[in-house]
Image 1 (tube, rainbow, N blue to C red):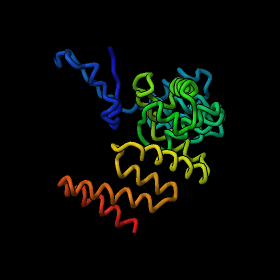
Image 2: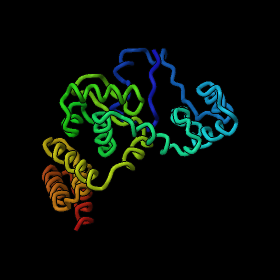
Image 3: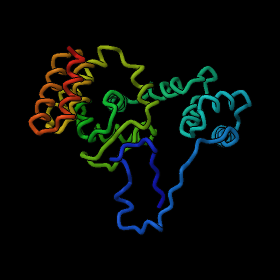
Image 4: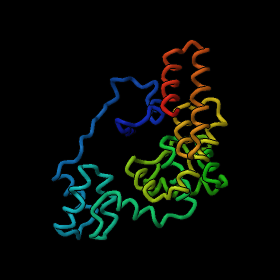
Length: 239
């Protein structure tokens, strides 16, 4: 089989289970560099056979050798679209309501979440969440590990995240931060920094401060003094 992974990909998405028990000598790792300008042109020619020279330049330059970015720009045939963010927003705009709701949550969350949790935050029933995630996965806007409720889903790329967030009005952004923080707070294993960041994003500085102080005290009791010190410093920055 062939497995792929970005070098900046979180470890949780590493395909370690796929290679467990296989002799390392039988595994071959190939590091892929960005496409050269010539390779990018060949890709655009293959995706848009009728593209003229100006269109090819419009796509190749902002793609920066990234094949997925080149694909996104190829999908938008409007000559006025010269930036990747604009191309992504053009694809996001017509998404079904449920798919957009899921993508909004993932854009603001800035990390992988269990699929059922995303549905809860988006206020969608599971069948609708499942269909929305399948739609986004087919559109290469999100990626998943498995298809079950507890399996993780995250946004496909930071560029997609930024394009999605750029469409959100401030009140919507605050509401999403609050929903995410409320859901995270129900888990005792939620990391303090992201939880505090979401409370801040929701405009609730006091709750962010309470989270940091409480976790700092817990760390001190557990003799994790460096961790406690780091959390107290973050708390002081909010005062």
